[in-house]
Image (cartoon, rainbow, N blue to C red; front, side, top):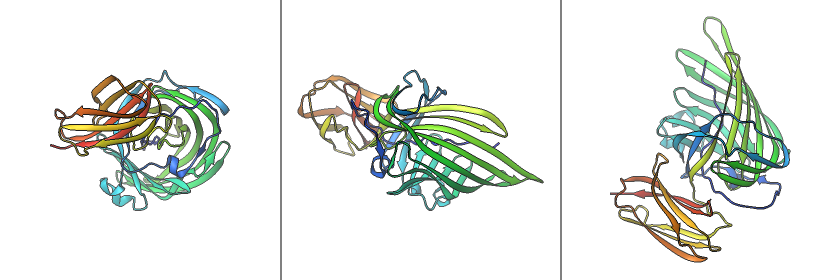
Length: 338
């Protein structure tokens, strides 16, 4: 059996608080991943997806997951299988697993162009994941096609996907609480077919939920149930906790600057808060491991400056994260050079 796929993408994650249940609208600017962002996600066991409709609260705080390591949004040309995905303009790449997924972002849609792992599966006709703008009760159906080699056989993958925004409200995960979240229901039906002495057709049905927040360039959480003619059901889920982006939480921070970048001995972080808040700072390495933590930072409304010693850290890519009142205010990648 060809390994099935799900659509959990890895990107930046910013926690932003709000007290309202305003109907969210997803836009290309607010959702499309951006090259340079990265995150650590967790895969978890399946839980009930909860209800649909307005004003929902989906509480997945009890999810217990396993880290997949750091995945970055990169240019497809920087990945090993770029030649198979000439129409993609971004890729989610995990160097630990050498797994990559390929997408095309535009002002009107986010499109899936396939994946590359142990098997490289490029789509000749991409799968539309989202249309923009997208809001509660919006829906569309898209047909898509791909072809790939597995062993000595050439497979054709064909499917249709129906995408519906079926609810909005508050989402709670181990990574935090998110308001004004839109739940998107994906229903995929597809086949993998080949000729191996006789015609061989494997059918799949994927019923998947994803939770999106405008301004967060990745699904905050996902749950899926996948069945096929060769086995199943296969169930699972996931969420993002440690992420690196370039955006600020607008309800928390007026300005932010990290320098020098690259750094050798010291990193300075200048930031201006909207109000007095308790702050902490964490530094994560490329595997998503916290390598330095400063708790109970005295942070006042207005200008603040932090100085972090990085002389003892090996060269590489890191993420500096500022937490304010248990919410992520700012995350930014920086390089330690020796």
